[in-house]
Amino acid sequence: MELEHGIAVVTGGSRGIGLAVATELARGGAKVALLARDGVRAMEAAGGLPGGGHLGCSCDVADTAAVGEAVRHVTGELGSPTILVNNAGITRDTILLRMKDETWDEVIDVNLKGAFNMARAVIRGMLKRRDGVILNISSVVGLVGNPGQVNYAASKAGILGLTKSLAREVAFRGIRCNAIAPGYIETEMTAALTESQTQTLLTRIPLGRLGVPDDVASLARFLAGPAARYITGQVVVVDGGMTM
Ligand code: NAI
Image (cartoon, rainbow, N blue to C red):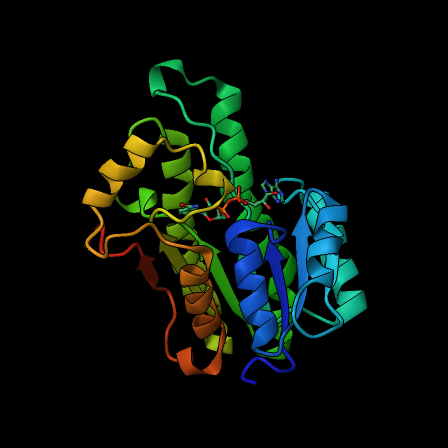
């Protein structure tokens, strides 16, 4: 198993894409810590991952102190993380004209500052071990924009700048940092789409279906593993061809 001895932290890992990624990393042999706002849900989800010895932990990624505490807890229980997947994310959609400061701040704080908080909390350990992979879950919306999502698109575009800059900062120690930009993936986040919205979307997706969390998870496992050893600073789009 290619991720044996890996210690992975997946934020927002108790459901959706995060849970699918955590499951794939566990199948690859990694010990996984799931971080989510709801600690009980995180622990339950961790208990259901393949293999044993995984961990669930409550953490709001936007809260710098809570992130430090969670990473210390994970390090104490499993060891210093070698894989970080910044997956936690939220949407608070509305047009710019109606967007309140709080709506902007909340999305930037979770989606962008959360990734910064997590990366900063694990990077020292990775540098020391000369071993580490960081995967940031962006979105095609960060590449092409979307009306009603200026906050979300800005946070996801910000993730790309963070990814490339960090990749350049830590490459000298063999640490890799890449971003994944999913298109429309069927999760609770996209459950609000109406049937007619889904049909319209499908006309724009050459592969003819919405994505599923496993479509993202298989890529995450590849990027986290040794087969991707010469890949860093990249943005890999998983969208059925929608934005090619
Ligand atoms: P989801 O809503 O099912 O899951 C998001 C997870 O993040 C949940 O477990 C939630 O509890 C957690 N979370 C939210 N705020 C948090 C915080 N402050 N601290 C810790 N955890 C927090 O969403 P989904 O679809 O699984 O999305 C996962 C990631 O993929 C997000 O970053 C999202 O922006 C991104 N994405 C999703 C797409 C989709 O079509 N579903 C498309 C492109 C990107």
